[in-house]
Amino acid sequence: MKARAQVRLSLYERGIVEALSANYGYTAADARALVVEYIEVVRKLGGYDHCGYYAELVDRARRLGHSPAQWLEHIQGIEKGELRDRGIASEERQYLQTK
Image (cartoon, rainbow, N blue to C red):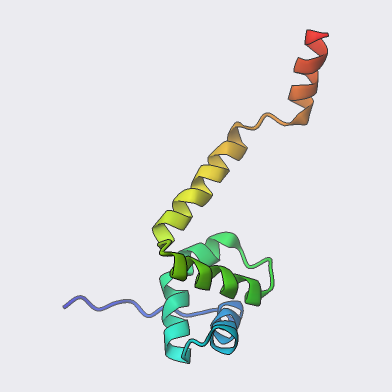
C-alpha cells in the first residue's frame, strides 16, 4: 500500500473548503478531499478571486466530470496561446503596412 502525502492547505485554500461546506453541501472532510484533489489547479490559478468563487469552480468541475488534469491541460493551452500572441503593436504595424 502506497502512503499518500498529506497536503497542507493554506488559509485561502481552507476558505475554499469552508465555502464548499457552507454553500454546496459538502461535509468538511469531503470538501477538503475535493480541494486536495484539485490543489494543483487551485494553486495554478493563484488565489486572486474570492475563495467562494473558486469553490464554485471546483464544485462545477466535479459535477461536470472535469478532472484536474483536464483543467490544467486547458490552462496550459491558453498559456501557450498567450505566448504566441505578438501583441497589439505588432498587429497595428501589420495593418498599417497593408494600407
